[in-house]
Image (cartoon, rainbow, N blue to C red; front, side):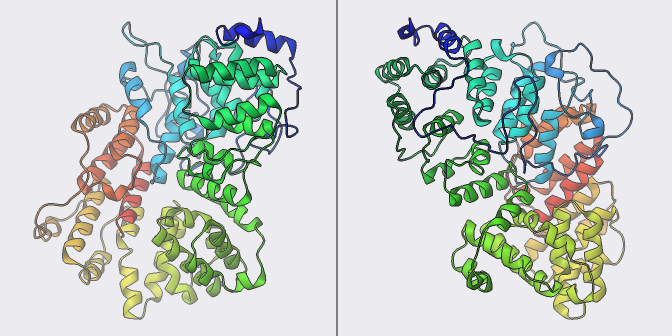
Length: 594
């Protein structure tokens, strides 16, 4: 009997899926719109392509960060060993978990942050989660928690929807794993594959969280054409005290009645909310963009459920979180229409209101500049506004193509320091060094000489040499600033040099013993720091990377002191990640204003 659905969800799923396998009923509002409308969802047994605009960070190119010969084979292994990156694709190696206890991995993986200020840490986290590697053996006392499920969960938290879909395709059948099943269902809902979501939920009803399962059952009953069962199940949820999600009940009531709902507020939307709204053919309120979920922000960036302004704001926040590539955001900026008057006054408009639309306006106006000098000036002003707003890193990525089109030379010497720093941040050291050389070669005025001299630590870290006259000029430039701040910057630079294997003369260090000996920085948990040291010394690559990320966290690198940053750099080098260590050192220098 259909009315028994809330008590026996597995049976009810089977009943309505058998009765209506195509789920062809069309609720109010017309055909459901896919949440990622780039194309039809793929077959359930094939991985869908990565979503357009999903970032692939520097460092995932073949061979980068991988040294030596990989020893080990992935055959007939624990399903938790599966991955989509091997060493040639940027994976961290099939033996990266050698020597790591499974219990420790189960404890640490869920602690990975959702978002990262550091592009290098974001890249390492992504590669760690996607690498094909022999999983630690399961001990007698270890839980049955799925490692691949934890990995996919963290990828979803980071908003990497395409990677989630690819990993789900190689994961074990989720019917007996609650985490995998929830991830599978949510992934299908986001892809607009409601039939696949409901079929999966029916197969895994026994392992799904009861509240999530029962809410999903309401939606699936409507899709199967059984609105009576959906209404009955909705009322049971109300009577059971499930009242903390008014948006769900608004959508459920409307779908059951065949009317168009009006959702007043939804600041924490889930994939089910988005799928229900799409099925009902209704728009979502603008406050959905307030969500902290990179995955949902990525979905909203392309969703017909929200206005164009909300799409743009969500795309910006998704890009800031690393769930959308800056180049994809630039394409969205370029597609917007602006009047001639707006384009001619883009800077003053953006200065008056630094909104997503006005940032797009500034980008469009910059692209219209034909002369290199004018384009460079526009980029510089855009970066200045972004720095004040805390989004410089994203802005550097947005203007990447325009920056690459500029050639270093005398007429752009005034712009050279800014270009060099941007290219260092974008992990293009060759271009950065060319611009740094331009700044030094053409510097004439005192201000230009000063700006060029301040680039020395970045240049020295990139070239792997702290010798030469640049150090003296840098110290002289620092001397014009706050003495204590200059000492801290010098101390960090020297620490990073030594972490990268460069010897710093004793007299250089001696000269810094006048700063008071203390600084306010975040201190890592001693247990995590101890674990990191032991993992790095033992050459346990995966565990070293995992602990490095947890120790540094997802915030800005400037929050961490020189001693900690240098120790993390040393640890990464110990496990063969030389390039990543250098990138992190350069990022740390940039983050502290060098």
